[in-house]
Image (cartoon, rainbow, N blue to C red; front, top):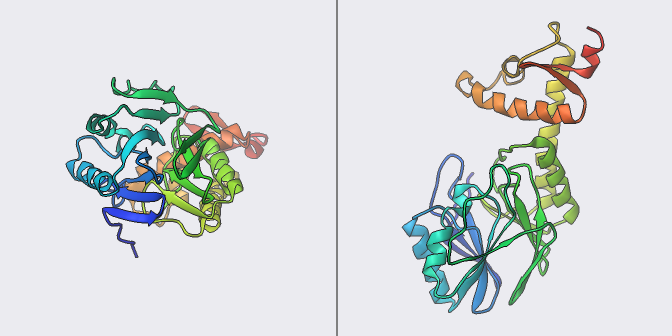
Length: 287
């Protein structure tokens, strides 16, 4: 059962969640943004989409109610439902805003708003505001520039799109993504505030579910390759075997998923590639 997320939720004395008002298949009920801190100048984590008046109205009402403003913005990654509203928010603030983001190189980031101060993030950077100490961790995989943010006072993690409140996420590089999941697992968070979906109250269970799900899919791929008579298989041929219960109109989506797994297995030196086909290292030795 889906947990209904209100437009505005006071999660605790130092966190207010403001829903991005942009529901959709990839965003669930919308993008979660978070106002963090206790003083009259606070940190905003992510900015929703461009020109979303409902979201901007919610944000401005929260700032007015709590007699505060935004002087720092942290962007978890470049996807437009997280960074799209940046210019709108910077323009709505009376004072200059510092924008923190891990640099993207694939391709380079779009220019930041001219009125903002851009501060490139590095792994383990510390950002402080009244009532909150935030530690940034580079967690690539979903995107190359993705970061999660640790709230040290509460042993909490704002997970962006690395971990969702419901379902599983997509990724560009599974090898990096699995390493990022293990990094977050090692942080031992007490709670996770995701970029989409409800609060994750049992982080260790959720992270292990993510890891186990990917490991199980990887095992299915390897078993299929190792039992293949034709030795080399295309991603679609793998999908036809592994995703038998999935409707055919979703098989192209599944191909992308399988291909990401194969690329990881290639980095792990468990498979070899020949054009658009793939084979396990074990079976290759028998050809």
